[in-house]
Length: 430
Image (cartoon, rainbow, N blue to C red; front, side):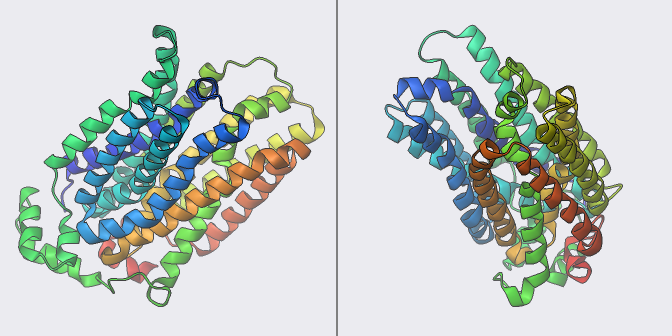
């Protein structure tokens, strides 16, 4: 099977919108508080409502993808991005802003399911890790772009409308993404699974694949049942649930959300939030690129084990600094080690692994289950983290380090390697 370069590139852009729209809010919280006269609870709701939208989008958008195909479902997502970003920028009160943030969350959640699945179905097994990994690369790149955009807009635009420009700029790449989706076709695997054999053959011929009968026959080797069920898919369901939970139990999003508070708790009084975010985002991007380079060489399992070892060591070091209130000079290097170890392993692997271990008829629904678990764990941990951290600075990091050590053991012992395995043969390996 040849690489559908256009399809991979366009679908992976959903990750850029995912990252940008997730991170851009960090630069407008102060303005929202002032413009809409928000107290702490109202501001928290305005910011966090997107997370709950993301959870619901991840939970239900997979069904849409299984029903109408990844390409068409991504078009729905693209339209939602355009409408929601413009709505946030033009919000006339906090209620309208919250509604648009919720729609944006639905789009982000849908992106985390539909784009990796679509890419996994249109690329060869040998390059699947790196090519699906482009989605994660674009998430990280989108986060870095959001930090840079917030900084630049803040420097060149003055007045009360600065925050509107910050959140509204995402409408431009959103509109481009939506338009480009009309240049790509449906996945031949999905078409074959739906019995649309002539369309599947036509899709393959556009890629220069002339032996369409043999390829489609290969797709049919592992179709399975058309509905996700515990009896039929117990092993992949357990794997995606564990991977999603372990991903968040590293503390990655809680730590990134509260990075400035962590530095303040360690005794740092003046750290440039914008420049610090750019530095962290840059380290994240570089490590993700390295992970993408090695994911099809080393394999998913080996990256997860190596990364878990680095994350555990980094978190244990941070816990010691926080517990003893000494060695603050090591805090930034340890947090960089943490972010790099995570991005190299979990960050590069999670969307790839979850998108490839289910049979075609339920692949998007299975990805939805893992992605929804990821997002609800993110919301709960991010809510609890500051509450616990105000009581004991070290305990959250001890907990995250212990969970990541458990992850290392479980992955090494129970997770199958999926490197280079054709999607139709995956059931025999899981």
